[in-house]
Image (cartoon, rainbow, N blue to C red; front, side, top):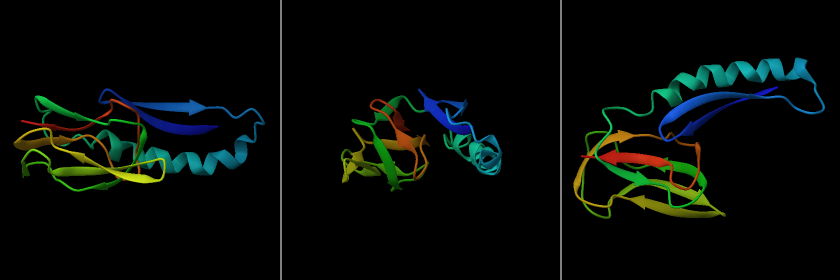
Length: 120
């Protein structure tokens, strides 16, 4: 069985998926690593959620976080870098404000509409 942490609309879910060919003994050792990583992802939304959401325009993987909670940003400031279809895309602030939360971690997969960060 494999364990995954899935974040939907800011809520993190721990999901276990059973493989069809069924070798459960080898999967026991890797299952311990996601347990240790789960609190990090659950703790990723640092600070209170802001009123302006910065969402992912497409599915992909976060390859870099360029801003921190509390940073002052202006319209167009790069907050994160999203890799989709072997291309890196800048996720930018949609207006002026202060980063209230960063809702993703480096290496995390996101879907279209996933909240990357929030601004106040």
